[in-house]
Length: 258
Image (cartoon, rainbow, N blue to C red; front, side, top):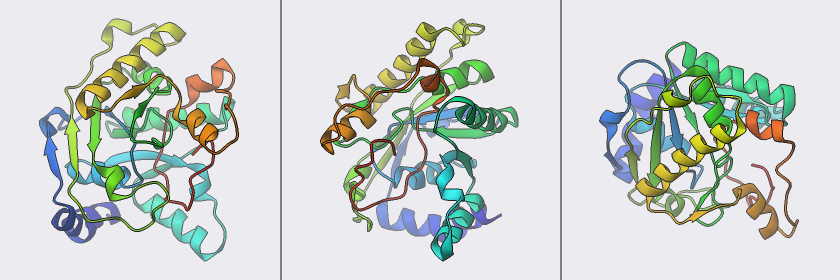
């Protein structure tokens, strides 16, 4: 109820009036049934404008830390995320990440729309970075279509490190659903997972017009922060990493894994 009221009555109409978002390909989002909305990630505001333009509820997997905060601000944040269709996602790898993968499967199993950022974190420079294979594994295991979504201009509305947004027009492009049925039954094959992920990223590049960088955004962020290259982790960990989740704006965004 909270999600619907905020989207349709209070927050949604105000955002549409201020930012005048334009949208293309909305008919590519299934009117019913499960699907994954795989989006590029330029700004914290992506997690606001993407679901705003879709008639159906969109459920994102949010960092588990958002649900365990202490103090007034922490409890308020946790309450907001629970009421706004967010689910906790543990990205520490191994069994914890596997449980998060299951949470995404449960959303799709109930016929819902699941929002994912395959890059795993916001782009540090508005370029498109290598996708993590968790989105492929999830799509193949649940056998649902993947709708590529290109966010346009949101990095100018709320650049990394800026808390208050700038009022300017943004766009959302929904690509045609991607069918990976030819790979069903091969979801544990790492080469297949990478092929599916790369196909999704190619569509995001084509729709968004972004320059593609064959590197993980988290590694580049770590390098920019002077922390040196960050290892991706064990092979099994990336397979259970769903990619990304809504992130709150911060002052420097220098953490290697956001």
